[in-house]
Length: 316
Ligand code: CP
Ligand code: NVA
Image (cartoon, rainbow, N blue to C red; front, side, top):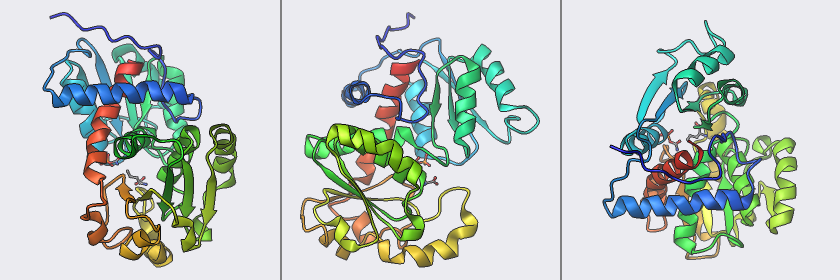
């Protein structure tokens, strides 16, 4: 069997976050995500990863990200190898740098899901192969590509839309959404208590991109901030690794739950609901909104696979 060629100007590059990617470059990958989705729905079989291998390192749990990487890579003829921290020595007995150098001799690419952003950066620096961030405490770049794909499917366009993130405004999702919305001209707001406002550093990074694209960035603890939103987005109140903060967060974030009243407060009947999942229903979102006609969470989850396939095709 002969491997199919897939032309991409980004071969060999890593995706650690979207900061150093231009809007047109992200759009190029997004277009490919729409292409592979169509091919998949048409039942086409391609072998674009034939002869390739990817190491999938997971320090944290995953359903969607792992399934997307494994199925998207495997069905195109590639060989994914899953490694949890119970399997490898990463950062413990063996340094991240040494692990990177070994994997770089054996694999075509690495996916890393873990705690420290610094670790995914070290893997990229020392492995010599493309590294894809499958979530760290700081960023979740593959998720937000699926999110903008879902918005584009829904609204036909991205520029000028308004997305409001409700809940823990400091977390990896809030930060990553702020960044991608700023690049694409999507007005982005965060409805969060002051204690959980995003830090200055991420706002400083995103502000020039927002200026260039014409997007706004608004942070507020007042409900009026959701007015006019085309999408209310939320995420768990307690991210992986923060389990001890559960009681404190539950108390603090109750007024920021996405429920029927908050959806109505946008003043638009067309507002959709998105969530990266997994969801804790009854906390950040009510069962009613989650199951409502406004909810696009399973289209969004499916789009994880198509966008991850497109990212791998572009980089590997
Ligand atoms: N949204 C997301 O990353 O899901 P998983 O944690 O299941 O991978
Ligand atoms: N903020 C969440 C996202 C899960 C996809 C976490 O880091 O656990």
